[in-house]
Structure formats: C-alpha cells, structure tokens
Length: 186
Image (cartoon, rainbow, N blue to C red):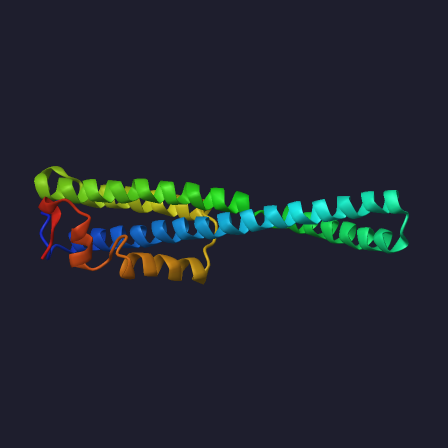
C-alpha cells in the first residue's frame, strides 16, 4: 500500500507525530546523560576528597600518635566505605553511558523517519508506508525496552532545550525547521 506525502494524509501526520516523539525522547536521553555525567563527576571528586582526608588523617595519627586523629580517621574511613558502597549501588557513569547509547539509537531512528517522509513525497507510489512505519515502530519499541528510565528533571531540561532554546521542535512549523524544504508542511 502506498500513500502520497501531503499534509492531510493520515499516514504523513502519524509519521510526523512519531518523528516528534522520537525527537523528544532523543533530547530527553541526551539531557539525562548530561545530568548523570555531572553526578558521576561530583561522586568521583567526593570519593577523592574522602579518601585523601582518610589517608592523611591516619598517616598523621601514626606520626603524632594522637587519639583524636585516630577517631577522626576511623570516622572518615567509615564514611569512605559507606560512600564506596553507595557508588557501587548507584553507578551514574554507567547510567550516563546507557542514556548516551539510547540517544544515539533514537537519533538514527529520527533520521529514518526523515527519509521515510522524503520517500513518501518523492515516490509516493513506490513506498510501502504501513510496512516501513511498522518497522520503525518496532525499532523504537526495542530501543525503549532497553532504555534506562528518564526523570521528570531530564524531561523538563529537554522540553526547555526544544521549546525555549529551539534545539528541535514539535509543531508543524518547528518540525519544518529541521526537515528538508521538500518535506515542509504548511
């Protein structure tokens, strides 16, 4: 089954909507990656500071033989151990990598949507729209099955990037901004 690529065609509208959702999901995972990367850097520095303080305090205890430093060192060692356990339980660096991989996969699907819309416009009779649409939906489903959860904070950051900063957009006019001229819908 084929379809012409005009703005009133239900297939065009449905594919444009799916494209818009993929744009939002892509940007949300990018923002989640940024947030997780920042969190990972903070955790790394806290770990360095705690380990340094613990080591310095315990070495000072050996040199000065002061009990107060021994107690302080013991408390710092306990905090450092607790922090290491926390790090092992919540790995923001790994989470950032998973968001990065998801964003890359979604970017690829976004590009496929653009090419599908292009093919529909250039060769309306030569495109099996329902089949390609369903293939893209299945590809997105597989990506979402493996994707890490995003937060409302990441979504708000993506929303700001897309709507305020106009990184990408969702309305017809805004989608037209990042589609080739031949695919613009008025």
